[in-house]
Length: 608
Image (cartoon, rainbow, N blue to C red):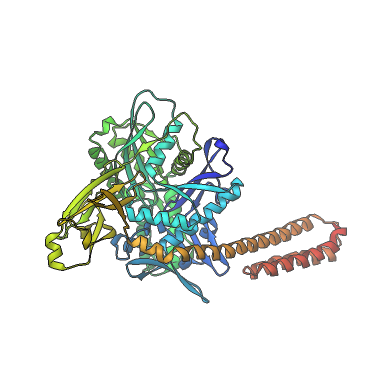
């Protein structure tokens, strides 16, 4: 590790469907295994009576525990319960959402207990698990992390992600836009360049679609020219199209509806996701719904007809990003594909056609690129970066930020695609309003979006000023956005020319104050349960392996007397049957059973 640092820094891609972690090791980023020796992990948490399971372990028990197996929480981050897109997505989820004011929460139910969790809490559990896996793999303390988010996330969603990471025990160095992370990874992967390059990063993941135009000059300095995206368009939507098609086909075969059957719906989600991935290589695949004993064929041609409208919809942010950057598609030097959904053949052919059959950059693993780039930026921020390539960038705002006027309209403070850091001075004439309302404090409301009225945009926070802050009928305010897209508000004392910071309180901030301690306590409480469940599972696996190995060895030893042979075979089978019937046995019960079996095993060693 360079610079004499004893710990490590990591980059985390917390994805809608899959997550990935990269660490900066030996002066270079490296994607590390975090789930059963695999470098990507399903973004899935399962709650069982014995504890929590993550990633593949959670996926494997999904059919038996559908209502307590949670996926796609990234689509809930920073959203309100009544959000139409959230309500649409939740109709496909076997788990249940409940309302707490405007905050959507996830209901976990077991016979003995029930709990509710926010999307931020579930995300913090995933992040905490990835942090633990990174520590275990590296054998080092994690001293900081850069967490990536979709470029089109609003400020509330970014703050919610930061809160989740902090609750997971991470020291958050930065929240980084995913297309920027991908461009950093691309830049490191390239030979030294002479002229400037214009890159278009097309990031189509499981839940989001982001398009960014970036310029890299001859010195390697990167500037975001434009960013456009859709936080509710991705591979999940492709899968939902197959689910709808499959449900219609099944209902025609059965003559009845299966839409309210949670087990069938969960199995369909698993099977259709598998089919979608297989159709990136194969021309046709089988969808097998075991619970209904139904199987049918899905051809790639049919799949493409189902998703063509969605794929074409991803061209709209491409067109907008080019327009905002004031360039045409011919000016783009490289189109970089990021996100697992870019493997879909129709996506690639659509982009090739749009960019006049220009070669698409597929040299990097689309599932790992963002985490790789985030680790690079973590190294830069922590002082570990000693590569001659500069790896610096200037970001741009994805959405306009404004303040509500008394008429209900939004007055723009910062325009979409304005480069950051930036600031804005605002002077408000308050005399008439003060006389009419006789207030002691005046609230101001901040929003983010492109619509003229605030009710059509995202609420991001509120701050207040006292009446005595008004001087000569005017209130002088200053707004600042730093390089990490964090918004701050200040009031100016004209007599002293001093700025006083005003706290901006939003829904996410209120959530954090109420729940942050509970989130940390929950993570700690479950950590103990998780450790016990892992130990129990290890004891179960060890005992099963011992029984199978002994049985196999006995079956190869024909020289044993027939009576002893049959008794020994039966003893092994009794153990394996006991394990099947007592899959939820405690660790102590499993260890006791292993001791008894090993004692018996000692008595027959002379025969083996």
